[in-house]
Length: 92
Image (cartoon, helix red, strand yellow):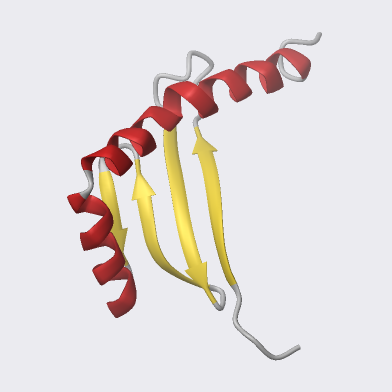
């Protein structure tokens, strides 16, 4: 089908059982190309295309958005990882 394809992809990435290395990533893509991404370990949005750089600059000016994105590690990632791990990894 013809048209445009825009989507956001949230990810929680970690490798330790105490979640101390957990990172929240939020990528926004247009037509399968990542334009801009928030990385909680960097603490800001980073643009990967010309348009993405502009979007990142605008997002980074808004401290409410930045604080909300930073909080996702504790409000979304850790609770979901704990649920998932207790259902899978902690079973013997």
